[in-house]
Length: 437
Image 1 (cartoon, rainbow, N blue to C red):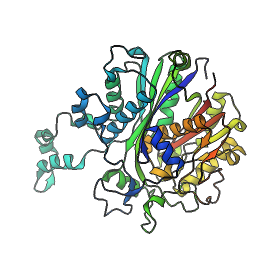
Image 2: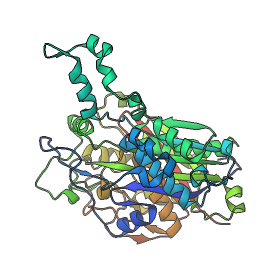
Image 3: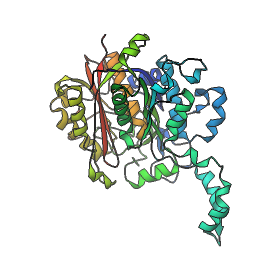
Image 4: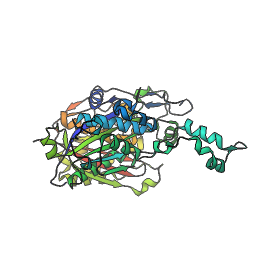
């Protein structure tokens, strides 16, 4: 990476296992499980009826009072991002427009925003009510929909479901008028946004950027799609909290979670000058893809080994320098096997010796929200010199040779690597370094 160093000064996470980096970290170290029966909608007819839900969650407590009416036009994904942003800025001691202060920590035009997002599901009850007004002889009539049906939707209806609305609301609330971007790369989105944010700061395009991702697929359409792809655990005999088992011999599919994580990245000199707490540095980034990902039913890790290799090269380090691995670990057997092989290809023997962890067992798959949370966990591993346990890991699956544990472990970590991949064949990886003055 370039001479302009990139510091991480704030962590904002919203997950079923904990809201806020403190509660999440404590839950992970304790091996807490947060997957249970789905209550957000009627999932009784689905093969998989469990998920990682956010309970009693609303973004209203994370926005200024004069902005609370806007929560009505936020899909759940947007609410997650808005809450994570508020937590991240507060954690960094950043002063933004949301505080009502006359001056921000950074000039508005020098504050950027990169947020990863997924395919936001429309509210089926809301949409269905409008569709029912466009029936002719019991069948949907496109003409009737165009003439009057769509008028039964609120005029701002579409603005609840555009992926870029996560970044739109965050930038409006906090006064971020610098470069803004939305990346829709599935589970790899968080790593890709953080990598791009680091690049932006390095080249002087911004002094600070909020980056990460958020998503909620915990709805009927999300559950249906993942069921049709054959990725979900459908064995009702196992206790819900123990169902998602990344890299474990008992892995038999993932479960859907909802959540996200956003990080505050700053120019290191600026962060030091304002006396910020600096968690870690971003020193390497790599992205890759696998064209075979166009077949969404064929397991792929999006050439994860290439992404990790590029990130190592970018950081100017060798595999032996890596002290901790935060893996993706979907708990889909074929994907776990391919991911473990990719780590071995990228890191060689280090893939088997460096302490590793995956967080999916604690909360389910967060999809576009996964990367930001995984990177926040990697940051905490560096900051505390502790690798959290992998919830529900007992015995490694055949071929999964990562150094995982069901208990937290202290370690001397100078560099940590985190990487993820998504359906569609994209992957991203980031190298983080322990901060030293």
